Length: 169
Length: 182
Image (cartoon, rainbow over all chains, first blue to last red; front, side, top):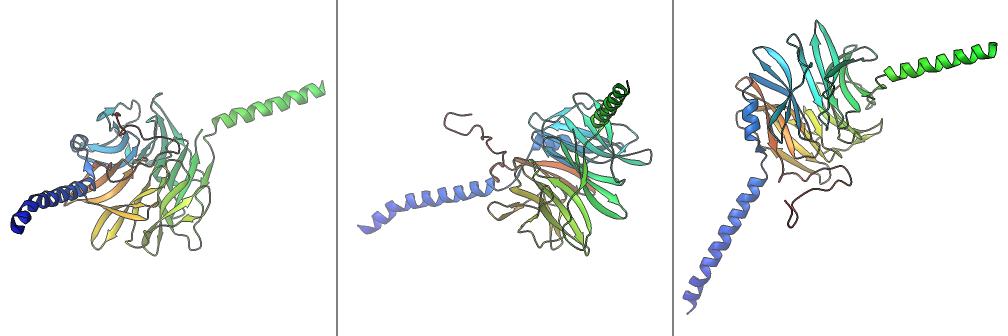
């Protein structure tokens, strides 16, 4: 009588093992970063893209098309690009960009007419202003704090790279 | 009369000071030193709350990521002491997560250190691509990676939900997910 009992207990064991395997596979799947396919496809349409900066739902980055750099601001949740009137210039080479959590302020480092400058753009006003670096130095990378009230800037001075923290009103 | 002129002069000085302070773009200061020897400090990254500053300290040709409490306080310990050179650090809101590029043999890899649990997560990226820059969303739900693939630079964004717990400002609830909730 025992063999039939063993046969009867086999299917639940097999089912249990299959369930455990499925759970393991599902667990493994959850431990992989999932690409945002639609957004990535959209970004792949550029000749190149670089210097990404995420803040909340916003992604700021520098893209290049036909040899010209431009800053892009993308709403990741809507997969939509936002207009940045007055920011991009065809004669500027862009080095770094950062955005705050509200998507209102963008900080960028750009080379324009032989000068490297740190500028702050306010999207709602379409305004752009240069931020002074003191003591003088050449900026390269910038990051805005989430609230947009502080900047961390990589600055070259006297042959050394340093980090400046700049408070903004 | 003289007293009136003096007070007028004082008032004009005060007004000039106010106008000038209105034009001021704010105070600038250098990130605090990290001990003797100096070296280049590159790749600054502030946590969402601004309490922590991550950067890469270059010494003897190696780059090591450091995390400093702001303003001007001590270094925070990290598990990432090896796998140098490090690059492109990025912090979550409270600094729980630190995304950073590390070197493992000939491979450049993207990892995330969970500073709360002391775990190091390796992020598998598309084959044939090399990560060059990282940016972690402050709540830890997304990671943007600049990849070099076939000589072309491309930014790709990855969803990390299911991989990381959210790192939110204190008191901010996670919405959804409960019974009867969207």
